[in-house]
Length: 260
Image (cartoon, helix red, strand yellow):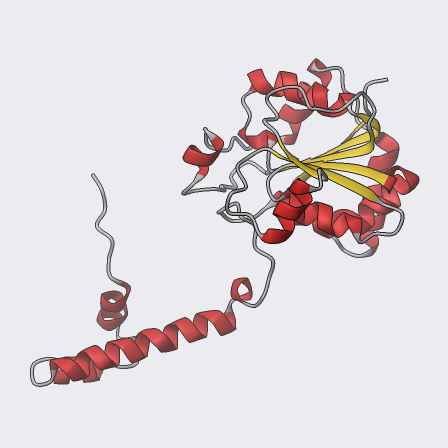
């Protein structure tokens, strides 16, 4: 049985928290125009409060993925710590995942860093800067269920986010080895935690299936099955650099060695 959505205005009035509740009750019969005007003013005040009080509306970067969080934004936050962990291996980086243009743009601002990206999904609604990166060949639009259009070890470091969570094990068996194939020094995966939900509205039409958030133990077993080993040295350096700045990622971060 579907639940009928309750009007937010009615809820505020019934609870007595709406600032114009008394005026609405006293004027509703004699002056409907005044009542409507008060409702509009109240709505404007509530919207203004939301914009001033919530960090989500104060210029914070927002991913095109709809939902609670974005691992792609976490990649951008983690770049300083990735540089500490990988050093010279950050000179030629490939990022794979939605909103890759934002990651590539930030990486290109880093000294002595070349960056490329693979956008797995449609970018018709992308901003001009992203479309420019695509025209220049820096960012490609490609289905990661199929082999990547790069030679083996084309990049020193490959970073993937907000993409593997939408792949079934069948396709992960193909995609993960491909990501490791094109990396020479390391592969970093940013994956969601179980219980987190993203792309609540558009996920079925855009991604083809809902996100499947897997536990760290599931991922580790899967790495073993695909003959991928965790990069212990990179893990230690990344964690040390992150702890100095009290950085805690909202996503699971896995550091893997590429295929030799």
